[in-house]
Amino acid sequence: MKMTLIYPSWPKLERQTEFYLPPHGPVCFAATVPPEVELTFVDENLQTYDPDAPCDLLALSVMLSCQLPRAFEIAKEYRERGVPVIFGGIAVMLHSDEVALHADSVFLGEAEGRFAGVIEDFKQGCLKKKYDYMWDHPDINLVGTARRDILDRKLYNYRGVQMLDLVHASRGCRFNCFPCCTGFLGGSAFRPRPVHKVVEELESIQNNRLFVVDNSLAQDKAWLVELFTAMAPLKKKWVSHPILDDDQVLKLAADAGAWYVYQAVFDTSDHIRNRVKRLKDHGIGVEGTIILGTDDQDEDSIKRLVDFLLEIQLDVAEFTIMTPFAQSPVRTSLEKEGRIFNHNWRDYTADKVVFQPKRMTPEKLQEMFYYAWDTFYADGGHALKMGKLFKDVIRREMEDGTYYRYNPRRNRAFDKGMPTTVPMQG
Figure 1 (cartoon, rainbow, N blue to C red):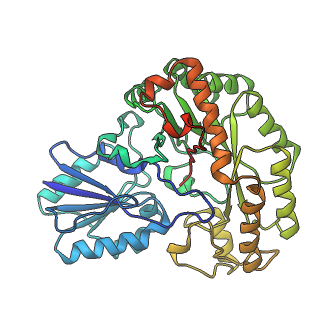
Figure 2: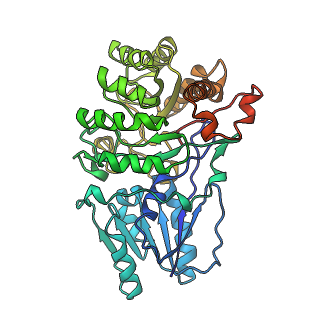
Figure 3: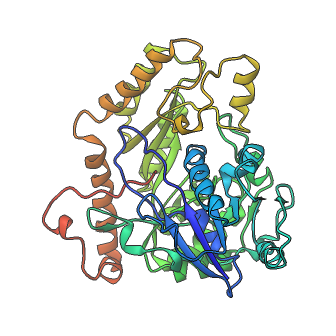
């Protein structure tokens, strides 16, 4: 049978450099598809699909809420042609009831050990309306190496530079941060993959630069020590979400190739100042992730926060507007207070105000979003600051002999002294 897997397009974050990382959800899902299924993958952000191509089953992998409107349009097109459509992915789990209105089937939860059964149901003509494994996580040992062979690698570059490959070493998160849906999606129990399985996958990835997309690398010190020790000989260079603030762990992370870390910056405290300094002291760059519009912020506090970021010499900053995503603690709170006025998922891109802020008007918060981006990057822009981080990783690769191994043609733009960036989020 022939199955087409489409990753719908979505609008990019305003003010951010436009780029596209290889999507992670589809390649992890593809590893669960039985080998006898002929799978065609389309990343609609960079490719176009042929609606007339032979297709027995359409699968839509939807990560972001803002992808949903486009996913519904694609589903309608295929269903009108008589092709059954199944949805899966993070946004589908967050909006399952709404998605079900546009689908022949929805798959909720993690697919390892389960999707072969879905295909068998389809072949037997008894595809279920819902496959619900939300609270029934598979054995973490079933998580295998993602199928990156479905990607058209040449599409994922920025100014000729190969974008980073995404990989995960654990699932679940024991933290319940107010803007995040992770507790609902992956559960509050930390579920680390066996280190040897992670290393096996890392060794299979030819790209030297990676994004370790785990929700947090701050949940289990003993496992982190084992993981980073095992990663060090691979000489990969990687980016991640926060790493445990522990001297031993930070040293091992740096030795294992930690390039830079996404660090939430929520105030101007010495705690944040010291956290950033400790990362930098270990040779790890810092990209601040800054949410604007929290209840304790007003116009003046946002201006002070931007000044603070410049003062502590943050390498890069990504400013977003607080967005009440489905199933997040902040949405529950704002719904009770009647402060959400926009339910159009296409606008849930984290650069638009969809709720009533507590200490300013929606228009003022939107203005402060632009102020933050423009002020922080007044001396050269997002691409230039990212370029500095990228030059640092090239220097490190040259020092350990991996630059030419993984980049046989090298980066011509860099060789000519042109600004070169590999931005991370998107």
